[in-house]
Length: 295
Image 1 (cartoon, one colour):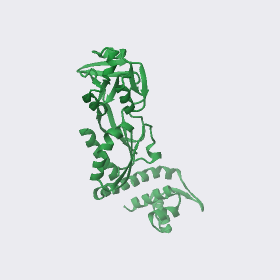
Image 2 (cartoon, one colour):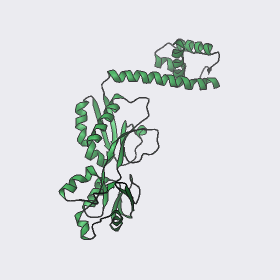
Image 3 (cartoon, one colour):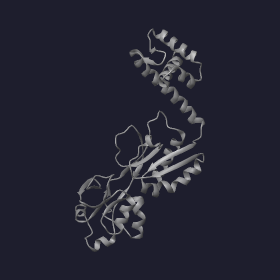
């Protein structure tokens, strides 16, 4: 066990960049740090660090050995964090990013319930349609829809968003109501600029899948604007159910080809690939799972 302690000290020395800084981090006398490194090198029978009066440099063996020591250091920290999770209640500042429409229609109307459950968490919710850098901009969590880009972030599946083909009744004063997917191409179409395959809709009915290619009349980067354009009679579009169901009930939108299913969108929570999830992030992840399961 003494060797493991010395390995952790070695890893901290390299991380801190000097014996003095490592001693400050570990709250140990500098002489103790030096003695532990010497003992470790003696045990291994090799030199891990070349020391000068101003700096330290890893030997070739030291570089390889450091990788193993860092893994042990990470496991120790992870084990301690897991214990903390069992005894700590979720608390602190939680910064979340979500698209404008989903933030308005789903997250905002559930956020008060989350705060009631976790009164020690303070939430900053940013609504934006731009792709943010979670780590660079200090976000704990982002909620994304659709296909994910490759990244070092961890993605947790939350659920699916149902989508429906919609159009204003006024549109059919000018065009015939489509009865099959192929006839959709005869109508002006409205698209999002991201999140869906460009110029194409996939519709399914039992085991049959139809691909419809269209030439978008208008493209926008916000679902709320897309729905408003659709209600105004500019064209047919595919909308999330949470955004169009009320309009369909009220009659300002028609559900087109309801017997055909639109391709659903997966929803993910993304967070940095830290060694372990903090209690506040874990609390939000569990809460979001429930929201998308019941919404």
